[in-house]
Image (cartoon, rainbow, N blue to C red; front, top):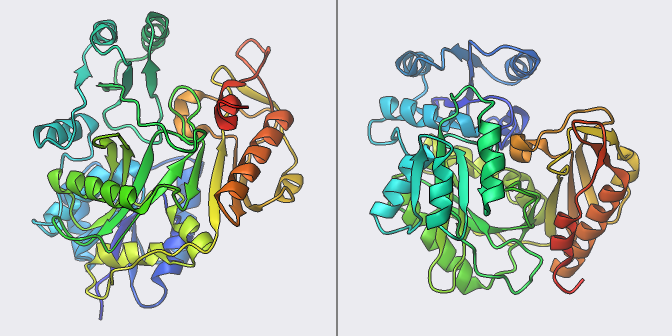
Length: 434
């Protein structure tokens, strides 16, 4: 009888409990592990869903040894997660279950950057911010700009891009109202090499599923990105990449080099990279399957990426090496509210959105009266929709058409109740010749 794969779950994972169980089918037993101390409506809903789908264990996530012991007592010898904030815990538990299979520090962004630079995989200068005012000195030395984010941040939350003294003023003022518990990390901003398609972002992500440090991936491919909304919020992901095969191969090699350095054990990884003219630069490495990746592969290539990720995490020898062959182009649009927005004052009709050209699915449309906060990063998207196209051009035209429509049908107000809008992101989508 196969031992179960323990999966630490919480809200906002890159795979939902339903997707995990569907991928596992009857051939891979899954044990859901939840934090016994989690409270609130989201935690209550997650408990109900988990218990309805698979055997469920409750552990104290603040007690690593206790959690590892409870998982071992349940018969599991492997553990994984698809939730950003649980990646450090999963790595620590993995180390206790399999001493050669995990590590403790790679997820923290300051330690991650230090290791990458020490190994020569990255050249980005960085430091932990002891005082927000340090950002002024850093901006003077790093003229390209300063990116500030929590050392354990997720989904671009609380991420600042400082490119002027005025940006630093706003940053220090905002930080002055916090309780100081948010540990911040500053990095030199690096501009990526401009794409041949100027409307795409200057960075990509590499999705990697591999069985061990120093081994070839079982699957690896590149995800294109739409331009971010200010300051650093993701707005769209697109597949397949329009980059040439030679560039894709180089990016995959760069991602693997970074994973070897950290080092990253068996599992799924999401490596954000800025391609460069002479060498690529790592933005960061995430220790879980990239968000939206499994659905994109299913929509566009009929490939079960979720099952491969589970098999590799479980140490299954049956996890074969795969390639991905896209039969159509797909994208997910994460429509952002303006940075100054604090509330939605008008929202589009979900049914009408579902009938727009190329729309495959409407995951969410937030409603009138709901709050907005750009500090939540990608999680603050006010609409999430999937699109398809026969080729890159058709996909991009539909993406832009849908973004334009959302721009005209959503309305927002600031903290004073005054209307606010943002034309900057749409201009970036339309490109320099628009």
